[in-house]
Image (cartoon, rainbow, N blue to C red; front, top):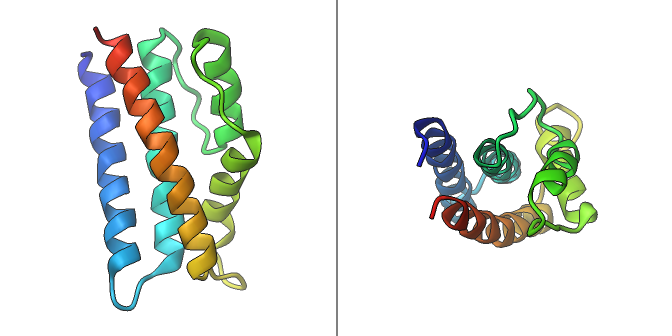
Length: 128
């Protein structure tokens, strides 16, 4: 596996661990759960893009990364609503005026877990 791809994966796994730890904390920081869930998926999408020979743009918008990945990875297909949920949850709750609650945190973390599993499988297949 390419060193750059491995670094993206390592950083994504750090975000995943932070998100899941924070979800279990007492009291949890739901905003952080949402932010790190999105960051995990963003980094895994970028790792897979690199594996497929595409340089990822400097964007946090998962729908943009999804569109690029769909062009180079026929095995990739994910519901756009879930990508939008993660993207918006990461941004909206980072600023005053909005805060995530347990429902938003649970929803974003559930999507993250499913996407993470699928993306890690695709990454493993791409590196065989």
